[in-house]
Length: 472
Image 1 (cartoon, helix red, strand yellow):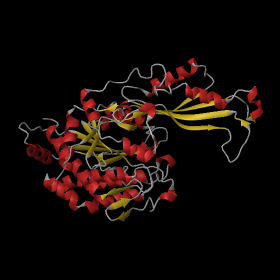
Image 2 (tube, one colour):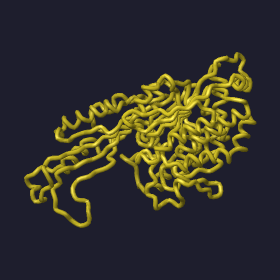
Image 3 (cartoon, one colour):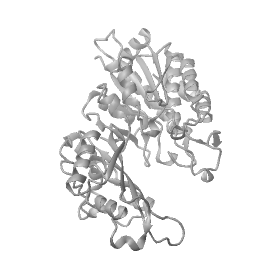
Image 4 (cartoon, one colour):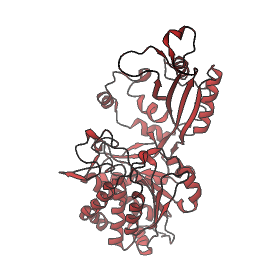
C-alpha cells in the first residue's frame, strides 16, 4: 500500500493540473454559466482516467450529471485481500461509489476576490479559485487515487463508480428523477461522499448524514394595488397578515415549532450517536466570535448546542419583502407581501408531509388567504454509526491523520444524500480534503496542498480496506 500512497505524493503536481483544468472551466449552476462546456470537460477527464463515461441528461431541462465506471482488476483485488490478511478471500469484488459535484457557487461578491476565481492561483502552499475545495478539489483527489492504483497495482482493487452531479449547488431539483431513470447503473455496496477532511484542530472530520430541507414561499395579496397608508384604518394589510402568519409558527419562549404534528416522525438517536455528540468539540466561543451573538436561542448552553444544532429541525425565515424599501419614507399600504422560508429536516421527516402540515396550520389559524408554494424538498439521511462502513471510515481516517476522529452523525446542512442512501440503500460516509480555512462558498475559496495529499491518501486507504474486507 505504501507505493500507492507515495505515488499520490510524488505525482501531486499532475493531480493539481487536473484540478486547475476543472477550476478554469466555469460551472455555476445557479446562473447556468459554463454548462455548454463543463459536463463535456468532466466526461473527458473521467475518460482519460480510465472510466467508461456517460453524460446523464437531467429531467425538466436540468443540468446534466456525469457518470463513470471502472471494473476491478482481479490481481489488484486479491492483492488488497492479501495485504489485509483475509483468511477466506473472495472472488467477487465489491462496488464503491464516489459522489461528487462539478457545479460551483456564484462568485459574488466578485469585488472581494483577491484573484480571478476562474484562474487558479498559487500562493505558497495555498491554491485559490472557485471550486478549488468545493467540490472540484475532491474530484481531483479521487482521480489521484485512481491514477495511483492503476500505475502501482495495475488496476483498481474494487469496482468504482463516480457520479458528478451538475445541480448540487442549486438544491439538486432533478436528481430524484435522474436516479429513478438510471437506478440500475447507480447501485453500489458503499459510497464515499464529497467533503470531510480535517477540523480546525487538524483532527479527521467524518460526517455520516445530512439534514433534509423544505423550501417554501408564502405570499399574501389583499388589494388590487398599493394604497395610501392613511387607508390602514379600514383596508387589510398584506404585510401584517404575513407577519402574524409567521408569528404563529414558533413559540418565542422556547423556539418550539407550533405546526401540529411537526415533530411526530423524528427518529430517536442511538447510543452510538449520543456518544458521538458528547465527544464533539465545543464550538460556542468560535460561533460567538464568528457571528457576534451574545447568547443562543432560548438560552441554550454549550452542552445543549450539538444536539439542537444537529438532531433537531428548524423553521427559518430566509427573506421578507413588502412595500417600499428605498431611501427615506414612502407612506404606502402594500398590496402584497412575501416571505421565503426553509425548514431543515431530520430523519424520518418528509418534505411533502411537512408541507401539508404547514398548509393545514395556516388554514386552522385563520390564514387561508396566505398562499404557500413549494420551491424544493430534499429528504434527510443518516448512515448507522455502528455499520461496517462507518467503522471502516473512522478507523482509516485515524490511521491517515494520526489523531482521533471527530464524528458527526449528521451535519446541520443539507444535500442529496438520501437519493443514494435512502432510495438506493447505499451506506455513506464522507472522506475528503476540506478544512475550515478553505472559505467554501465565499470569496477567495482555497485549499492547501497538504490537505489535498492527506485527503487523497485517506481515500486510497479506505478503497483498499473496502476492497479487502467488504466481502469477508
